[in-house]
Image (cartoon, rainbow, N blue to C red; front, side, top):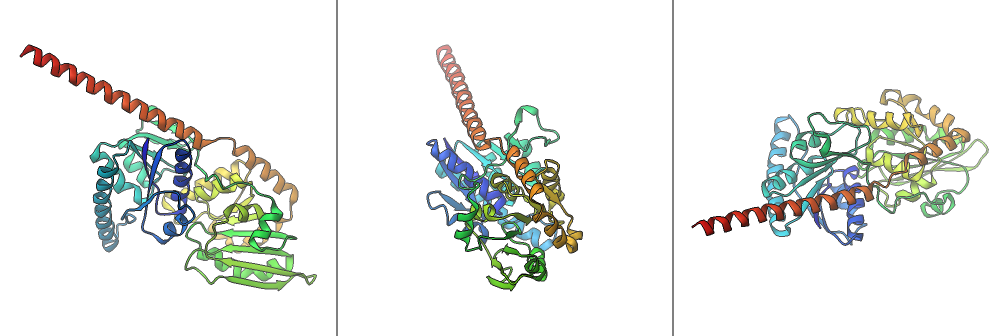
Length: 384
C-alpha cells in the first residue's frame, strides 16, 4: 500500500501518525506524513529521520476577519499543494488524524478520488472530523464515542496509536538519563506539546512549598514559554531539592517512567502516553479547548480509576492535592493497576489490518468495475 498520513498541527495529532507510519513501514508499506509548518512539528520530526515528512500549508479556523482570511488563504495553498502531492505519489488512501491540517488535504483527496479514512483520538469528535465525516470511507473513534448521521458500517471503535518507543522503563535508569535525583518523590508537569503558561507559573510559585515537602519537580514548559534551567532549594531536613525547567523533551518514556505523579493538560495524546507508561496523573483540562473535549478526555480517565480531575478554576489548591496524592503509595499503586487494565488493546495492529482490508476491497471493486466496462465495450463492438 501507498498511504498518506495527515497528522500535523500539534503533538497530539503528529505522534499517533508517526506510530501508525512505523507500523505500516514494518509491514512493507510506503508512507508519507503530511505535517504543518509549525515549529512544534519541525521539532518533533527530528527524532525520525527514517520517515518521509512533507510540510503542507494550513491555518486554524477562526471567525475573526483577519484570522479567517489567513485560514482561507492557507487552506487554499494547502489544497493546491496536496493535489500536486497526490498526482505525484498516487496513494491508495489518505488517513487524517484531525486538526486544521487535515481539512485541505481531505478536500484534495476527494477531488482526486483517493479514499479518505479519519481517526479521532478525543472523546468529543473535533471540528475537522465532523466536517469531513460524510466524505470518509472509514472513521476510527474511541470506544464508546458516537457520531450522528454516520452509518455504523463506516465506524470502527479503535484506540489511539502510541509510538513504539513509548513504554514503561525502570525508574532508576530513567532518572539517571534525566539527571534527576534517584531518591525522593518526583512531580512531572506537562502542558501538552505547546506548553501551558499557567502550569509553568504555578510550578514557580509553589516550588518552595514542594521543596519543603521533599518533592523534586520536572517541568516541560513548551517552546518560547519560559527559560530553561535548574532551581535548587532545601527541604525541611536540609536535603537539596531541584526543579528542572526544559522547553521540550524527546525522552518522554524516561520522563513519565521517572515520575511518581504527573500534573498535565488532558489532550488525547498525552493521556494515551500516560496510560502506556502507567503513570498516575492529576488532569487539568484546558478550559478553552474546542467543544471542551479535554474535559471529556479527563473524566474518562478518572472514571476508569487512572487519575483525578481538577478544574482550571481550582488550580489555587492544586499544590495541596499534589502532596496528598504523591505520598499516598496505596492509591498510586491502585491507579497504576487500573492504567495497565486500560492498555490491553493493540490499536495500531487493528488499524493496520483494517486499512489493508480497505485497500483489498477497493482494488477488488475497481477490478470489478473495470471488468464490467470491458464487457460493455466488447458487447457494443460486437453489436456494431
